[in-house]
Image 1 (cartoon, rainbow, N blue to C red):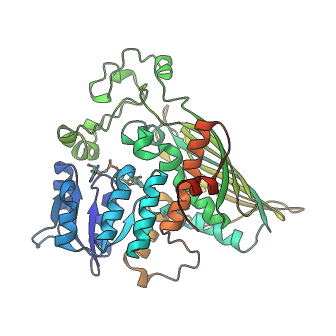
Image 2: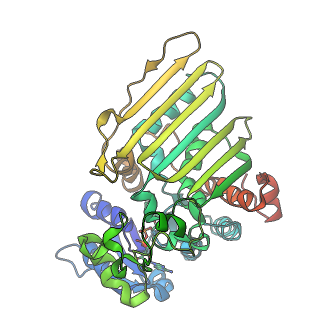
Image 3: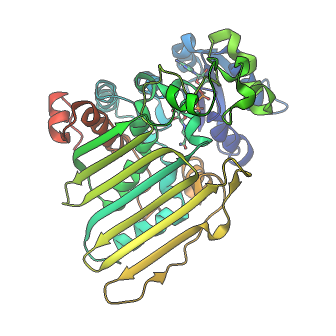
Length: 430
Ligand SMILES: NC(=O)c1ccc[n+]([C@@H]2O[C@H](COP(=O)([O-])OP(=O)(O)OC[C@H]3O[C@@H](n4cnc5c(N)ncnc54)[C@H](O)[C@@H]3O)[C@@H](O)[C@H]2O)c1
């Protein structure tokens, strides 16, 4: 299979290395594309196999030429979220299948464009919901599907981003909703996709509250950061700030971003306390599903630890999972948690709680990434996917609807009905 990659920032290297280092016998990268010539050059060099003439590279303005000249079978889209739709549509129009990073897109108008183009061209879109592939989460899917707690009635789901990972969304393009849809779309698309998939259900109504409570100018004052600058590199009080990124001293960040910033003014280390930030860091939502299940969901982006807690309630009892992925930020090392940081408990009515032994997997995102890459690049070598983990434009679409509705609900201070939202935008996702 011939692949082209558009968007050569940090995420694209997972796809690139996987094709080159693991699945190169049956796959090749024919071209890379980016709007930044520096990152494009780095990617082209890294994607070129030794002993070949290298990989073709195209600036973003020449993307259509890339499609016409290189004729890739599949385009991998790993650009910022607000640009996904355009690349997805142009790729499909040129006869290519698409693998898109999450979120599929950020708003309803772009979702409609994607769905219309998919219908017109018949091409496939896969959204890389790696979280579905982590063995621990697949295990939950199996237990729920096998009726471990009877009929599912409700869910409590809390996802915590720590003060390193969480802060990162406030440093660069993610910090404005027009770019990322805010954390409800950009990040929670993973979580809402998991809920849709675990519950085998679609969201019908969303009621959310959200605000920015931590990454604010007032918090900077509380931390004694008066006179702070607009970015870490030139900030007069960086030495007093626990959030100083020091991108210039980090080998990966300096090569990929600091060395490239003169070309497009993409600063990787903008101040996380800026007034102009337009996304929430604290959101709580209630979601009603078409199966009658209701979910309470929390996203927090400044937690002292990183991970999630979920409890499914059912007619026979509860199933819970807690995964501490990272702990010990500030006042200590930022350590990845120990193996026992994953616990899964089945508590059936009238019985003692039982610890469920769950495979933790290995590799990024809870062992999810390597498994997903196997299904993408060498599906014939993988066992049959009885959990339906592959995600297409329909599930990709549904995964952003909860977040889009949550954003609307935060704004309107009222519940949002998803069927009405779809109808008024001329979208049919059934
Ligand atoms: N599934 C996951 O767990 C996961 C993890 C990280 C990122 N992502 C997703 O991957 C995508 C990329 O994220 P990232 O962290 O690599 O971002 P990044 O900012 O590091 O990289 C984006 C790249 O796209 C380029 N770019 C920007 N606008 C462009 C345009 N119009 N045309 C062509 N190139 C353009 C930038 O120059 C940059 O090289 C995002 O959609 C993000 O949500 C997914």
